[in-house]
Amino acid sequence: MTNRLPAVVCLLFLSAFAAERARAAASTTFVASYGVDTNGTYNCDRANPCRTLAGALAVTSLGGEVVVVDSADYGPAQILQSVSITAPDGVYAGVKVDNGSGITITSTSGTVTLRGLTFEGPGPNAAGNMGASGLGIGNFNGSVVVQGCNFSGFYPTGSAGGTAIYISGNSSNGRVQAQIIDTVIHDSFTGIWLEGSVTASISHVKLSNLSAYGVRVMDNGWGETDVSVSDAEWSAPSLGGGNAFEVEAYSASAQLYIEHTVMTGGARGVYALSSGALAYVTVTNSVLSKIRVGLSTAGPSAEITFSGSTINANANGASNVNGGTLITTGNNLFIGNGSNVAGTLTRIGTL
Image (tube, rainbow, N blue to C red; front, side, top):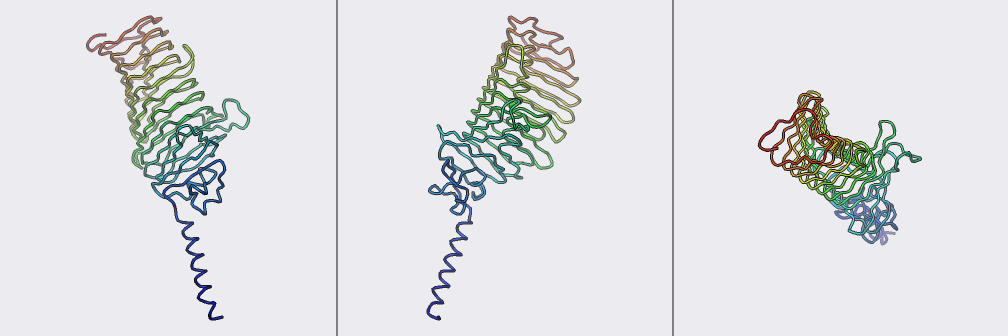
């Protein structure tokens, strides 16, 4: 009996060591169509992948990466730490959702990067649609990068859901820093909704068939919102559909800077609405065409400055009949509109 004791102790020690090692988070984890989430005991390594993003995230270390191995739906997930989720080119990494958000980011700080994911909502009037959204970010004061992703099928039920990307910042928690790059958003209610204490850069994004808004920027009383858009595309039915870019300000300023962007179709191309605070937009070297109203303001502190842009084939090129200021500077071209201007333009330099 005494001769066996060392061997038993050694076995117990090795078992405990192996269990502890399995519980330790890994810097790189994997998900695959053939994986199972019980592989979390192996830290979802390459040879033993997990089946869902949620399963892999549970064993991924702070600042680590979840890698998608092959094409499948990997389900919704909540992110509570700095992490990257990456799908290689040619791999369909689905995040299908009927209600709530496909991915929710609620960690208090850090950096989250999402690359190559495909977010799919149930579509309009679909059975089981409980008001789904694609990506939801709140209670967060870190940085988020969305690159090479695709969003579609997000429509509201009542007041719930319907937004492909929703980012809300609260100045008491700091600011959210967001980059949305090389991403496609289509066939949904709202494309990108940014509110509160948020600084965002949107580039090379395609927005199409969105029934409410392409990009909506608004003050929610939680801090100034600053957004820049470059090399983007918006397309909607001629003179119909939603607003391509809208800014609303109530108690803190909301600012939007647009350049090298093409807007075709929709109810409004660029709309600035002020209910007290400054709602400010600049439009530079862009095209607005086949829109009900190309540029429009409402409210005393709404302002749009535009330069080097082409405003053509719209029912109305620009309007501030409901208040606000339209400032033209540079070489803007008004051509083929039903009417060029309703209201007044403030001219700086040439029209």
